[in-house]
Every structure is written in structure tokens, then in C-alpha cells.
Length: 404
Image (cartoon, rainbow, N blue to C red; front, side, top):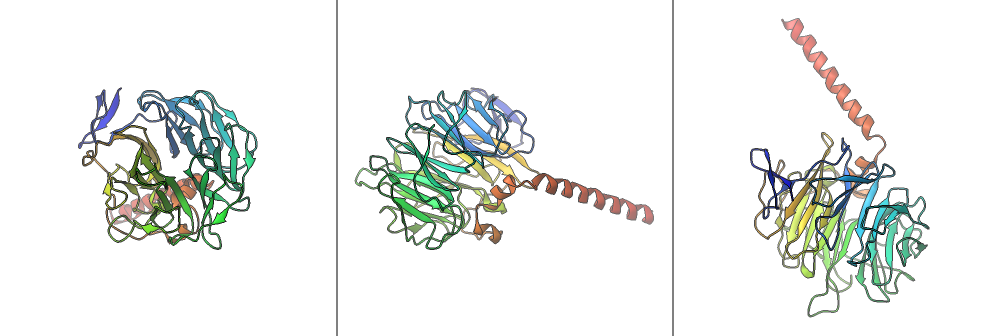
């Protein structure tokens, strides 16, 4: 596989394999421009097959780990999430859209078609049980037996921001988190596959759930570990949400929004957490190998991580999308995590200790950067900034000429 390796001097060189624990810049997406990459998915049976979703609605696919990309679906509503079925034989891939329902592929992402039952919904998350798949939308949870035909499955008055399956066997145990503040708390669970729901009285900070993940079963327990990312921190539970322990703040992780969580294959004690920083410098990507007792920063080349996909390997490949709001530059990276200290040339430091958000207004909803990227005003803001720079340059030139 041909990839671009970034060295300390910023010069890219070709390499046929991913170097261990080194940040590698992938080829730019066709027609990338200033559009953000908001979703990534990697095939669970082939770590070279990756799908990227952009804010302009385009879907792009690579079969060589990011060396080359092909557009497999044209522009439309922004892509918010991409989910491959964990079944290695189904070929099912689902895409959630902002205000446009969802798309489904039965051939691993080569061709795409609309689904039924989710028209005009904003779909932010998918979660797979053994016999069905669930979707988190702006009007509650939906369920489908085949990923194509969907029906409402509770919490219709709640805008769902994150969703996971805490027990896959029927009746599946689902956990959902709200995308906006809700009286009584932002977490809900269903012990009967989505038929009925109850609110979880969780002792967590933050009023918006940005991400949820349930890990593999530990060898000595029947309960999967649950990791919850809010707009202010990261929390874990080992008792089905009865109690939660904070793992951000206090020197472990910064107190920021955690928008991406992913476990490593069959390891209940190894997972990644990422943040876009909510418009601040508190974004980054971190790894734990001991059930959140310790974390290490992987120091991504840009601190604002907008999407993360982790391959189904013992030594996983991380596919990471970053975004630089100042100049609206999006980039894609690959990282083969061998457990060693990260190598590469990060352009911005990643926080390793606790820190406060510098954009508290964003805590009332989704992360500030995602709201900015989806805003229809973004292009006009950029034009205004450019115009201001031109005016300032003219003023400086005028005063210089007068002084001369």
C-alpha cells in the first residue's frame, strides 16, 4: 500500500506499509476544498476499505487504505455517521444524514440507496444488536431488521445524539443519549429492545451526550463496560449505568466534549476517546489500555478530531479526520497503534491534563465546531474575514504612504 508519511520537516515520502505508531497523511479526497470530514467507517473484515463522509453530503471510498479515493455517492445533506455491520458477511453499511434520513449499501459501500421510514430525519448514530439495528434520530430511536425498512422505537420526543447496544442478545439492552438538555438527565435505557424506555439518573456532568460505546464482555463479568462522552467530560460505568466514574479532569483527561469513542476489537479494557475541542484548543485523541485508569495522548497532527474509525485488528489502524477552523482545512490521517509513543510532526499540542472549555456557550448543545461546520452561515463568515483582512491591509498601506 502506498501512503504518504509525514516527517519532521513536513516532507512527505512514499511508504508501502504503515510505520508503527506514526502519523501518516492520507491522500486528499477528490474535490475536498474547505469541506469538513464528519464521519469515517472502516470495514471490519478488511482494514483497507474505508468510507469517508463530508459536510457536503458526498461519500468517498478507498480500497487501499487511503492512497486513492473514489466518489460513491454525490453531494446531498451532510453526512453525520457511517456504520459497517459487525457481521463480516452481510456487506451492510449505513449512513446517517442531517435532515435527509439515511442511506444503505448492501455491497460494502460500492452502491447506495435510500431507506424507508426515516425520511427527513436527522440520523446521528447507529447501533447493532444480533437481530436488528437501531438508529438515533432527532425524533427518538428507530429500529430495523434489515437496515432498509425502519419503524419508530421510542423516545419520539427526544433528539438523540448517541446510541449503543449494551447487550446484543434478545431482548437487547439499549442506551441512548440526548442531543439537547432534557429535564431529569440526558441518558435513557431500554432492557427490552426498545419497546420501553426509562431515564437513567446518572451522576455525570454535562447536559448533552456526544458519544456512547459499550465494550466487549470482560472475562469475569456479564456486563459490558459503558463509556459516555458528554459536552464537558468522559465517564465510565461497569454496572449498566447504575453508577458512573469520571475519567476526565483531575489530571487524566481535559474537561472537554468527547465526540468519538471506539473500543479495540475484543478488548474490554482498551478504547480510544477523541474530541473536536468544541472550537477550543482542548481537542485531541487519547488511548487507554487499562480500563481508563491511565490515558496516553496520541498527539494527532491537528487537535480538532472530527471523525474516528478503528479497524478490527489486534494492532488496530486508526483512521482520523481533523479540521482546522481558522483556515477551514480538513485532513485525513492513518495511525498503526502498536502501543509505542506516537511519532510524527504534530502542528498543535494536544492537552494531556485537565482543562476547561474556552467556549462555554457550546455546552448547551452539540459541540461548537460541529455546529459551525453544519451552519449555512459558514461561507459568509469566511468571506467576511477575508474582506476584513483586505480592509486592514488597505489602511496599513494608506498610513505607510502618508508616513513616506
